[in-house]
Image (cartoon, one colour):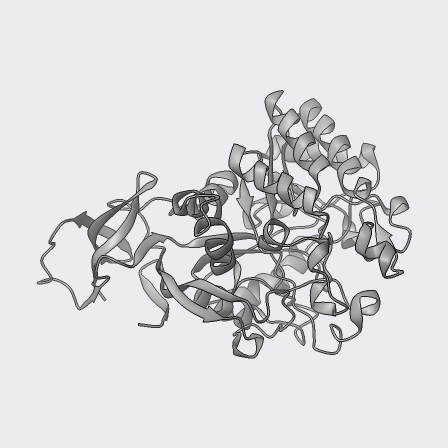
Length: 424
């Protein structure tokens, strides 16, 4: 189908211009003013108020399949992503079997090929069994099929092992995307070791358990030349370490999540929907992360969408499973709390959710231009709605944003020329 989108505020050259965009044969055929609809099978009028962007990319998503399909499936997770305006979801390897070899990875890619409605690109593990210790995988065996390598959920505990992994990945030109956590510093903690933790008699996770491993790994990345990407940073120290490493020329990038930029320990309630790893930190940490966004230290915003069953999330802060869902709220939360309040521009948000993830991980379709793949989202940035988890497409329901009034909704997702979601 040839699709003409007229009068859209179109993201071109990192700004917005009112343009018509004609999509033909899975690519962007042309851009301009007053393009004729003679060759269009369908015309959508954006009326000068809807924003056409390169579709979002989430480089940190848990789709739970294979192994844990009672929490989420590739089909439901990719449908949730499509609804939210995502073209690409990169799936983390907390799976059974863990994608630590070609045979195990194929179990996942077969399901992706069958069920995904948008592009789903897996991460392979760093260590056999995703244990963070022991034996490294054969990185080369699966390098052509993965976004990079991660033991997400587990930090690589041994410096020598991580150095060897970085050396191997540097030779392959692949990214290590690291969950940073020093096991010996956890001490049974499950929320931030801060004021709320002390006041309510909980066990805390100290900030050092995150930043100490980031500091170690930045030094190793400097030594090996590996492209080192840090998952879901949450502390002010992490921001400063990465900022310093970048200033020294280390090939390091990082991500944080919408909840870390808009919430802190002051927002905690005795409810499992506020429990994730890393945890919500102090207000100082939240402010430092926003500063990191503003000065470019933080490159990407990723959701760490981590669905669990209702039962697993119904046991309070202490006993609930770690993880919250985020695909269907990410843009609206950030648009409401950061863009509409003047903290960042809409262009900056699109850069961090659409453009930079593609640049860092080598994915296509990061620009709206003639000949580019038609991977797009059409946004109504003023649409008001209230977060009701029962209306999620995702099987996960646990979100700290439940009940929030937000602004911004995706109206259409186009993936390589195909409309995979629409609400027009």
